[in-house]
Image (cartoon, rainbow, N blue to C red; front, side, top):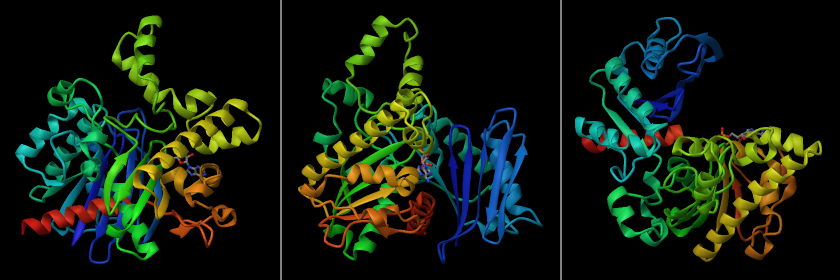
Amino acid sequence: MKVLVVNCGSSSVKYTLFEMDNEKKIAWGIVECIGLLESYYRRQTAVTEEKKKSVKVASHTEAVELIINDLLDKEIGSIANIDEIDVIGHRIVHGGNRFSKSVLVTKEVKKGLKECFSIAPLHTPAHYAGILAVEKMLPGIPSVLVFDTAFHQTIPDYAYMYALPYEYYEKYHIRKYGFHGTSHNYVSQRAAAMIGKPLNELKLITAHLGNGSSITAVEKGKVIDTSMGFTPLQGVVMGSRCGDIDPAIIAYIIKIHPNYRNSEALNTLMNKESGLLGISGISGDMRSTVKAATEGNKKAKLAFEMLCYSIKKYISSYYGILNGIDGLVFTAGIGENSTAVREKICVNMHAMGIEMDTEKNNKPSSKERFVSTADSKVKIMIIPTNEELMIARESRACICMRT
Ligand code: AMP
């Protein structure tokens, strides 16, 4: 069975074609900078090196057309006929209160997704355009929507509610939803395999640390709490997002600052101009931040310390909520690659049984591995995330349930 995973971001379309009999990637790539003067297309297959070229792509529809035509290309393609694809899995960032698990695309489902536009205005219209484009290019092939919010459905009400008047939950569905669920789900499963115990016997904290970051408490395979909230802005300090701040600051800025009289400007401030970028004034990228901090830049050092401290705070609170943990997982760009961030977080956590082996932590590798000491009560793991594979598995399961 072949599954095509499509991930439409605000200005990009990423894809992976899987052979599910062995869960191996056949072809994958990305179209970036959609709608700009110049767009880029990077593609690779299991048997060819990565190729990059400039393209003119004005919309998500055009990007999907480019990708499908490429997959079908007689010389460089990976399939001879569209019927070779059994199902398409779409990554969807926000299911709102409409979707709690993966669903097969129907007219009704598309209508429901449209109702989610306002809750994630940067992402959902792009997802929607991608679904329509795939339908046009691959008629008759079923599509499945896989939601980043789905894994967090088990969070109890006392953890997902905000203490606003209850009607804001009832009328406007304002509550914590959580994000990166597909990634947290994948690494939880891998952590159980690494530890060698069933997931339903384990207590884990998973730290997805990338440009956007979230920390999740997982007990017996179910999410108890997660750091992101109604939107992916809440939680730890991120690349260009501020994470948790006193909400009264927003009202205060509106009052004192003439530039911030509308929600768009405030959203830009908190999502695009804050975090590492806002504090350091240099970059939202961790590599550049660490480099500048090492060269003596005080603001970059402060930004680095703030980010690590905010993660440490969430890990500590989830440790308490779970009454101890068996494993702590690091994943995504920073979690998988930044030795400095992992070390800064794990230092002085002995009281919780978290003891890092710094030598193991410093050893570069792209494989799953333990970086805790032999006698650390908590296993510290680095697990490369694989959201695409998780989406492919979910899509296959959805189709198999139907037949
Ligand atoms: P992601 O959103 O998962 O792609 O992660 C992006 C973040 O990972 C950026 O802040 C990068 O600087 C960071 N990152 C990627 N590779 C490394 C590395 N080798 N060392 C430190 N940070 C890295």
